[in-house]
Image (cartoon, rainbow, N blue to C red; front, top):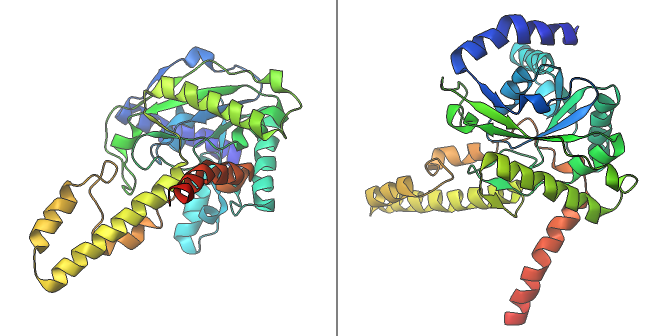
Length: 309
């Protein structure tokens, strides 16, 4: 039933309207396999990525989506879950541990039946338009399934639908699809975390070349926490200035001019909403090896700090 709804939505109802309004362009369409399973590794700029990428790929594509989106109550919850299933989203528990393994197995099931699987190696949307460090779950999945990985650069979706905007701006968007990456030389090494990191970094390098984005060797989730913390501090300063009645206007002007990704800093009433800025592929629990990678990434800095003090 959902497969039928997917094709009706893509080819009859939603697809033609989106193509007419947004006139999406595609470079590298010849790289898309006509048959067999493959993974599409995309940069992640906007919610719209999960709509336009499957729309422009001729064959059915499935994305892993956090299960929270499928468990909402009432008519709104039902409509959300129905729509996500219709556009090829697969619910997975993202809480880590056994849930991360379940997410991996869900993706492998899609690939083993010969379908396309879309995944965002960064694990979440970019907070500022830059390309962040990839999570290694994609590498493990590619090795276990024995399938090629196609790097995909989404272009302009962040301008059409920035984070927090529900209705996208009508403008032309596009995507560049790179040549399939073959990792069969690493067959049988899916439990070697150094191999997984090497594969993931190769994928991210190709994404950087395709997208032209600046690369940041940090997880996007860590950057989001840092940006959120800075926004909360600035919001508190604004609140204190407003209470004292001094320099409130000047401070507000300074905050509006400050950089907060590509958007203005959050006002006090908006700060709490930033905690809920999530997306369809925030699957940090997909591979726990990344937690070890992240700890090792910070250990040298901590050691240097202790030595300096």
